[in-house]
Length: 152
Image (cartoon, rainbow, N blue to C red; front, top):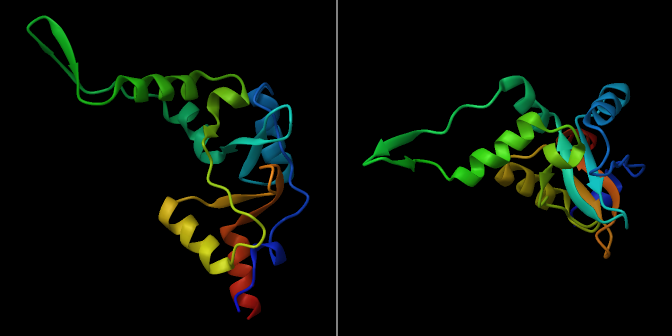
């Protein structure tokens, strides 16, 4: 029988709220030497994740979406809503403006192989672990799974 996430996850998970100034959240990442933070609403429910990848938008800058002018109208080759979302990430001043919403999460009974498959398939580095009310109770990272593999 495979080990579960509960055996390897970090239990004392630090969370932030969407209204937190981005500068404070960035300082937490640096001070705690972590690469991501679960974002919770005022009831403690998981609503997103702020990761180093989200912060790269600020440094990378925003590319203008490809478009063509045809018969006096503009035809975008990408969804303009995607450009708008990326613009908010680039210019955002709060965690909520920059975070990744609609986060994949798992429960503590998920097996390590299943957690590894989800991370690989979704190309993510961490998975918040939530209880039945969708409140974060831990976080499992790729590094945690590698530690579990090494312990075998």
